[in-house]
Image 1 (cartoon, helix red, strand yellow):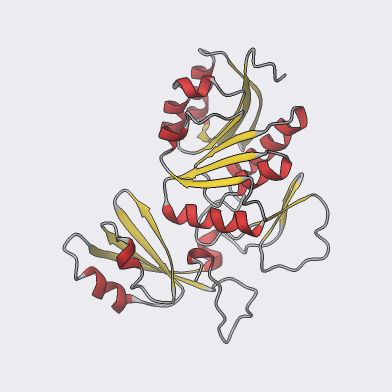
Image 2 (tube, rainbow, N blue to C red):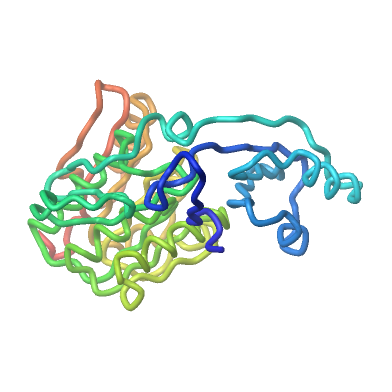
Length: 291
């Protein structure tokens, strides 16, 4: 089983489609890997956040989860939820375009999708299908950056499904380090890298964004929380980058980041916003010789 990228076949769906239903169990505390292996064949993955575990299954698994949780005093089953897969992802996952990219789920077999740069993407149960405005903004920023200059080394912080790392590699990056703190995101991104046959150029790593921002790269992509971006742009490692894409920012946050960037040798070259709510910046360091 490939964790969150596992497919199954039931009486009401064919083998090309993803799971139809998601059963999510919210557990206070963090399950260990040795406990996860006991969760059975319908276990899709564990999203860990703030010391809690969100266990995803393709079938109802209450009794099994409860049994495992009850054997560990550090764990407590708090709640459980049921969504269709489309409800969880905010709509049906279908091919769509963010020029010059065409994003295609692996269960689609569409002969009319030969135009553009194709990204095969299975979001699993992780957000980041490029439906979110900030992801779309980053894809547009990447296309703009590569239209100006060839960029060899890329650092993608908060990679999620790996879509931006894959896009950078398909545009010509020779090496991309894709980082996420969440093990389920790392597993999903790694599987998507394999789907696009880019293992030789993309490394996916589980790590803190703040601890990885010093990594040598020509382009920094950070589609991540405002607090982390605010910390990163004040570090010495940020000043060593030639290009940057910053996103995940709401309007007031974007203005704060704009002000902070004005205090260092950085300039914003272009920006995208969605309904004046979500902002994405493309910029470069002055004097980098990468005009």
